[in-house]
Amino acid sequence: MSVFRVGLVGAGKIVQDQHLAAIEATPGLELVAYADPGVQLEGLPGFTDLTAMLDAHPEIDAVAICTPARLRHRLAREALTRGRAVLLEKPPATTLAEAEDLRSLAEDLGQVLFSAWHSRYAPGIAQARKWLSRGQVDSVAIRWHEDVHVWHPGQTWLWEAGGMGVFDPGINALSILTHLLDEPFFLKGAELEVPGNCQTPIAARLDFHLGDGPSGQARRIAADLDFRHEDPPHWNMTFETDCGVLALEGGGARLIIDGEVVIDAPEREYQGVYAHFHELLARGVSDMDITPLRHVADALMLGHRHWVEDFVDS
Amino acid sequence: MSVFRVGLVGAGKIVQDQHLAAIEATPGLELVAYADPGVQLEGLPGFTDLTAMLDAHPEIDAVAICTPARLRHRLAREALTRGRAVLLEKPPATTLAEAEDLRSLAEDLGQVLFSAWHSRYAPGIAQARKWLSRGQVDSVAIRWHEDVHVWHPGQTWLWEAGGMGVFDPGINALSILTHLLDEPFFLKGAELEVPGNCQTPIAARLDFHLGDGPSGQARRIAADLDFRHEDPPHWNMTFETDCGVLALEGGGARLIIDGEVVIDAPEREYQGVYAHFHELLARGVSDMDITPLRHVADALMLGHRHWVEDFVDS
Image (cartoon, rainbow over all chains, first blue to last red; front, top):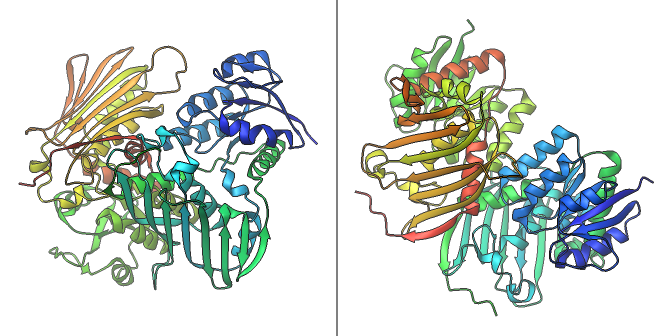
């Protein structure tokens, strides 16, 4: 098995909670260094920035960029230009222009670029995808409800312009949906609830139409995203198809087909992320899917904003 | 010269003001019919919808879709699937998902698809593009000011969700800019002024950075769009370059280089649109550029909204 040496850029909470252990557990990946101006990780060479890390460790083959989203475009450009493969935490960039630029740069340079939508690696997803490919989806209902106070305490950036609000978790649902469905779907309307003191929605209801279907009744996807939900979270989606009903619960940890629990497994999404990254590196191909971010941009462009009560972080 | 038969879909104001005369004036294009459920055009076979028009006129090679934007995706899909080339008025679709779907469908079918950004055919644009390609652009200032009461009377859809507000004319500036510059640019911030009784901005200030430039000072594009401007409009952009200063005024009708008026000609944008469409048809290639719409989506995703006084249509 080919071995690839990985450097981390950004070493905050998600890296410490997920990336470090997942890289460690992935055969064929070797973590050699990290870059972060404000974090100390024990037992790993640390640098203040990407430039210094690559200067000191020319053997690094690939970098995983886990900084705040607004820094990712510049860092990914630097890494790609210096001949390194790149993994991008979700979302891959702040704007679609940045994301498309990285895709085209990686293609021009022949470098591997991977937009890591971690929710696609939940335990039930692969089998759900296979099962859904056998029939026609008639409708989808998504309920992505969580308590922002529990899951995002103190994340004030969520509420600022560009912070995405409820689309920060909601993009996980969209990343699963775009991965499960082989046909495109199109936003026809969106209702966004925005607290009076915030820039981004605390809740969103999205109405998509599936496929081109010019005749007959539209096949619909209804997505209901809400941050104002008491724990435990509901991260569920239900697919009505001509072959039966498929449900994913717990963000994809549980797969239920026609009422029967088929999979119910502990979450190990980031191991799936890095196993896929290794496969991309070994094959020398990219997986830079921008569609989840594009759907969010469409929702924020097309959505009707309603003003709701101020949000108070508690 | 090859002759292509054209059918119009949608026959409202822009068609009567621009498309009819432009098609008439274009060698190699022959207008044979139109479809519109609510408009009567003299001397041209009319149909209530696209399906009926194509059924009755199988000789139609290409359709120009000039309906309200929300109808374009379905109509373009139908026309492409029935083997016709398609011209789309701007913007090409309501969402990026729809626009990307049309691009990929046309590619799969080997059909010609053209997103007609009419402002790119203003008299000074072609020469400006040639001149700018010789040097490096250091900064761009765009001022796109007009009186909404004069230029968009009664267009209430502008202010509804998805209606784009000041981006309806502003996307013309962005379509020129993306056409003139060979390098990408990236939105770093946007301030949007939204009337309290509207969903869309009446004014926007956009801050783009040009190119990748990781070192030194960023090269910037400042775009200032405003609907609250007394006639006459200012549709101007100024490029500071290492070879001098280039200015476009009047939406591109006047080209001024280092203070000297190089071009000052009457507007005939739609003749340029149809001349280009004929060329695409003759060569069998598409020109489906989505970047102007993508920049608008980025601005509405990243922009900071400020609430300003209610808009009253007068």
